[in-house]
Length: 142
Image (cartoon, rainbow, N blue to C red; front, side, top):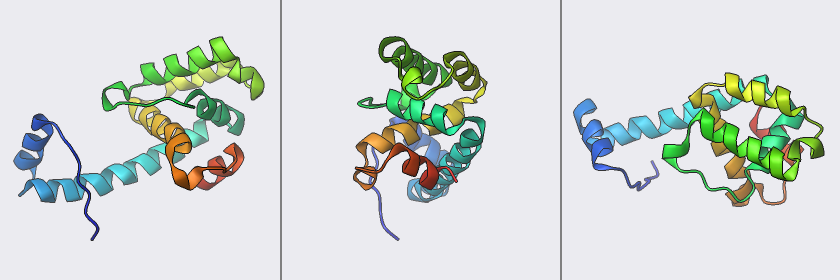
């Protein structure tokens, strides 16, 4: 099985030690579980938003770096709101800003986190370099 080296806080390390037989056993459980939860949350989220709205979110995250402590619905909402306000990306993609904002507010923090990771991944992953928004949405949201 391939190994991953992650940097975690002391509190996260202690949690893994407290809840699993070993820190490694905890990490080996949590990482695949987190990936599975990401894809489940992203599929659920993609059912809530239409393609034009997903394109708008993708565009809003161009050049944005997300941090774990910013993975909440409020941060997603603010980022999209700012991109709509400053760059009119909702107009570019033919989206009603009010409808998009209402849908984003209904998402859970887990769904918002999945959406932020998904949108950021499009811009930073070498796998998706040169892939159109539509193709990315089709390949990752179905």
